[in-house]
Image 1 (cartoon, one colour):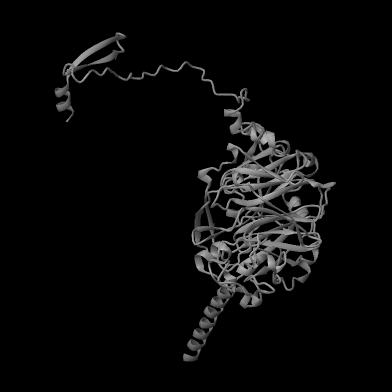
Image 2 (image 1 turned 60 degrees about the horizontal axis):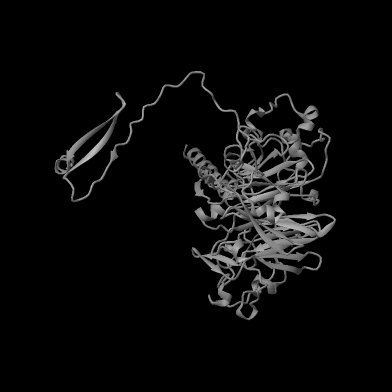
Length: 567
């Protein structure tokens, strides 16, 4: 009898220990045979889009980080990237793919101990889904902040980078650090251009003092608009997210100018964001950015801009941006309001496919990626959530559409394949970068957890699963019977702020006219006070309007009596 009870008790202990082991292995996946993520829910906007893992880091590492040698004093070049290399403070934010299969990663110096603010790795060096150690870019000397190596060409703080079709890398060095709630300025912000073939600096243009505000880190992103036939015919649009302006740079003229408009301001009611960490702890945070990112629309010759503090999307013509004279005359009604996105669809970064006009945007609060089409009316119903994975994409920070072949990194996460029934095959991939930033802030840095990861999915598969993101021209052949197009009556319902204030003859939407005559509203008139000299009588006169007889009535009151009555 006792043997059966002891055996049952042992089996219970084994079952409880196994459950605890599985939960622990899930929280610390790299300790036990790689990550063990739960299957995503296909019923919550995921469908059958295959999310493949490119590579990941638990902790960001560098090739030459062990040979770090720098001045530890705070007075070194008036900046300090760290008294020593602190791996936990190296948090990647943005990335970009080059044609030679290099992945450039930006690491803003918002904390101490960031080894390199710009680095890269090769796709061919990825092994077992682990990202290789980073290599500083450009050479190591440009990232050394030692007093003996101080140079105006050093890269201090880079937020994001952009590559063009002529093999050049563009970046904005903010030349300032946000450390200990203070702004440590090293110099004026600069636009730097590197040749990817030789990895050399070909231009460094300092921003004039009237193009930015001192002690601010608002130059967060940039978009390059270059002529494919002429590399010198290039314009750079730098987003100043703290001041609501676009700083334009002409590569041929080597000149800056600025364009500001009321549409660039954010909406305060959408500045509050909520996400959950992997341990299901809800985190609430606020953002104060005006607008954060812009994409090129070559078909309509416009710049499509959005903000992570607003649901609005608006466009700016290239002709207005590329002309200094026109930019000085802003605000103008040429800034056009496209529409409003769905709830919790604030996006800090988005990208646009110039062939299909599909806009792929980050959805920070939905832990994934959404899509909508530039040629279709933008309504909350037209925005589709394509990928949503809380475990793999806990805090998305950057997205890119690339034609680099990533087929060898595809896994067998799903077995379903698509035939591209809508008749378009482009072979592009949507690559998303996510970090565990909110989890690190709430629970601390865990070396056994995947904190930074690159994931991708096939654009064709996503468009097959979500055909609503394609243009109307494809509607006859691909739209399923369950798809109901959003009504277009709301598309022109909201007009741009410019049309209401700055245009002399704006477009006036139809207003509501009541069929009955409203009743008159009585407004009591204010009494008229006539002051007299201090040497005059102790009495003063008030004049009232009697609305019943429509006459003025004068009354005389004693000053002292009025004083005592009031008190």
